[in-house]
Amino acid sequence: MGQTESLPVTDRSRVKRGPRLGHHDRAVINQILDEALVVQVGFVVENQPFVIPMGYGREGNVLYLHGSTASRMLQNLEQGVDICVSATLLDGIVIARSLFHHAMNYRSVVLFGRARLIEGEAAKLQALKVLSEHITPGQWEYARTPTPQEVKGTTVLAFPISEGSAKIRNGGPNDNAEDYALPVWAGQLPLKLTPGTPIPDAKLAANIALPENLTHYQRGE
Image (cartoon, rainbow, N blue to C red):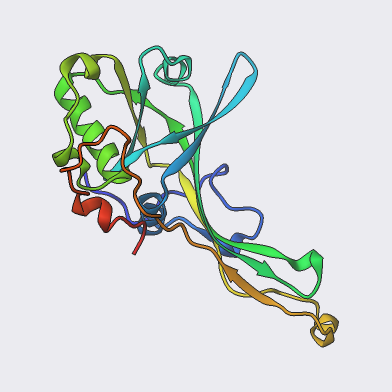
C-alpha cells in the first residue's frame, strides 16, 4: 500500500500551541525521524505513566523498536497499549533582548498509535538491520550479525507512522517593539550534533583499521 503525502489531522495530533509551526507532511516527519537517534516512548500501565528513551529505525511508514524479551516495557507495548512516540532535534538557542522572549529552534515529531510484535527470524532480522543502519550506517555488513539465539532473545516491535505531526521553530527572536532599542545582543546560537574522534577499544588488535563508515559518520545532510 502506498504512503499518503500527509498524515491525517486528528484531535490529538493537531498542533494547538503555535499552530503555524505545525506540519503533517509525511516527508517532513520522515526527515526529522531519519536524522534523530533517540525517541521517547510514553505509555501508561496500571495508571502509572512511563517515558522511556529508545533507539529505533524507520522503514517506510513504520518505526522499529527493540529490546530484550525480558523487558517489562516491551512486554506491555506488545499487548497493543496506546503509546506516544516523540523525537526532537535541537538546532539552536534563540537569544532575545528580553529574557521572556528567549526560545529554542528545533524540529520535533510526536506520533500516536499502537505497536505490534514482529514474529519470525527473517522478519526480525530485517527490522534489526533497519535499526542498525539508522544508527550506524554500514555496520550491518561490517560486524557480525545476530545469531538465531540472539534474535530469539530480542523483542522487535513495529510502530506505524500513521497519526502525528511535526513542529518546527526556526529564525531569530521575536522581541517586543520597545525592546529593540535596548543595548542587548540578540540573535541565534546554532547547535549541531557532530561526531568526535573514534576511540578504539582497549582490546582492539593493532592491525585493525577504522572502517570508512565511522570515519565519515554524520547525522543529517
